[in-house]
Length: 619
Image (cartoon, rainbow, N blue to C red; front, side, top):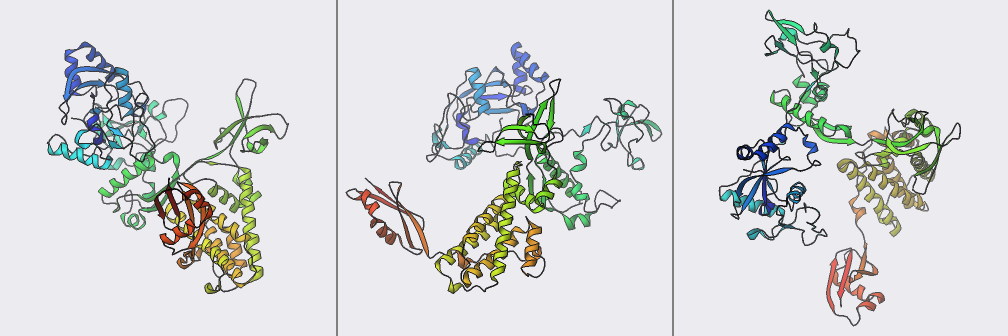
């Protein structure tokens, strides 16, 4: 039996590969010395699963064949070094045309490569089986009754057929592996296990808990001091000699459930106090570094489900939402010492010249004027001396400026490249907002009268409420704070250019300034708080209601229609928002530049995308 996640490729199987520990491999080894040697080689070679994608694919034919259950065709069975015995059934169906690993193996051993997936009709992808497998999902070809089916339909059709014939079934396989939690070091939590003189494992009795590590140790070698000290491990269990475990726990064993312990940190009658844990958990929003995005999350979910199974928590998951922050990068500079080693120099001690793309082309030390080498952008670290002292930057630019720069420059989950010019740009923006607030405060307050707005005022207010809608969605749902800030900057630029000539200009400015300050407050709280107070607003700005979108402001009286002839832009029309296709078509054919390309031609089709586009197909 074989396991696959791609039944849509089933008709493209050209061989079967089994693990060295598979019964078929063992049977083949009895009949062939070459197979036996290869099987032994695989068993004696320990390769991490993560390395299998890049290692050389090796195998040997068993001399056995499998029968394809739908075509009746014989396909050879090979022993391969890339098949794991502990995943699935230890055997895989190989589809070299659509799996790169299978492709590399088939190419190496001259096995058949049969294409059964083609790109979808609207796809620009191409198939190049002379050089690589086509691994995308597409439309079935060369697959008999399944030809023409796309992925979802093909998946179900093939699975249904195999189940109907009684030769296959749908099944979920979990890619779980044993977790080695012991470490051969002193620091870490003790493992509450012992062994007797015969090597039998014993659990620490309750009166032994907690097991405590000795504190009077001397760290003077590579060996853990509790391993080096034969006396520490010695103890007794029920009067018989026993020995403490000298390995300690992997730190993930402690850090995986700390969030639950935080709910009742002083509870001393168990791991966690269920009442407090169920009051606070699950965590609404969890923020962590990108380096812990996989393992820490996996282990935390594992521990949480254990806590649930033991009745300590009632929730199924530890975190409702997860955000993994990217790393902060900064320029790195160095010189060579007398022995050729690197001496890393802080960016604050280096003067640079950059090209038009901001890349360093020349660098020298501020003190001696001598040149230094640029090593590009690297993660801020002590080892490369490229960290930026936040206190110095805050003292120079203010905390709000630094916050704005960091949140605007990159999405929170991606790396952020530190840039002094970027910080200065953030400061200039905040100064413009401050000036705008002063200007609006100077002209005073006016009440908004929607019925008195002229067309320009309607357009500006529409842009304001579009911005409110986008910022709200970016912050609440998408958590893309950089695009939220970009939207605030864009509407700010439009507001700064708008006149403050009449009452409704001022009324829109009052509405806009209040919305801008509230939306900016989570990002630049200090400045927004000060301006809020200066404007005479009641309460703290962080307690103010988030601005609501005025749906009526979003209604457009007119639409801009792009007119194309055979896909090329020929005109732009401003039409009433409720204009019909016929009305738009009539206006389009009245345009001189449209008739220029359609007179004398046969109109094959007129495609209208309401409110956006009219495309005339003519020849």
